[in-house]
Length: 298
Image 1 (cartoon, rainbow, N blue to C red):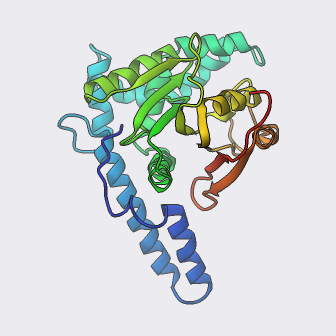
Image 2: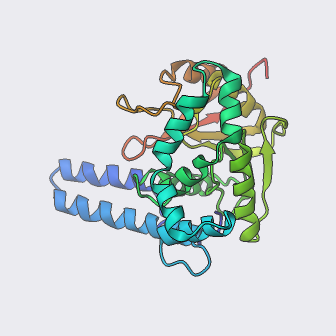
């Protein structure tokens, strides 16, 4: 959520991936050791992790896992803590099984209907945000740093999932999943934070409104990623930014990752006047594009 406090790390000159890449270059040049790099890496990741924990802290929770279990316990009344923990730990397999049973490959309507009705995704995503799988959710902290660097104030988390982005900005969220939107809106309300939620099944995004749109691990899920780029371009202000991770691992067997080739998406971005202005080529692989010129057809 957006209650990450300001800190020297977030306001540092470089984003974490830039700092670590620079440190490794010092190792290659013989000015630092691998041990120096490891210490720098662990320190920076710990700083980001602490900021992330502070932002997601729930009531009297003491750590990220405790926050997740408490929060889900309040939202899904009637489930005890161990029941919730088991549901979270098994959510990835549960989601995969439900997808295989409900979704007809290549059929858009069955994909949309699945996301709009599936509840296990709430458990899977909130558990992912505890960093139990990997550290990639910390890319939201990098996005915050990027937004501060460029003076962004209006923010859209597109394909919002469980909504943990938008720290300190005017926040909007958008998704096609009713369960995710309900849970995300509730999370903001419980923290006393304003948010505008867009249900993409029946609402359109405002034209020219956002300084920054993130699509964190979203494009691999989209049945029409090229068309989505045009939608997001219309919603951005002139010179606005789109940030996301446009990638799936070769050994990734998640059935919901239905896009593997992102070249058409990059071509569409170029045709709409976007240029890549930043890339995390060191940690999590996110890219940022800026709309530097206009294009016909929007």
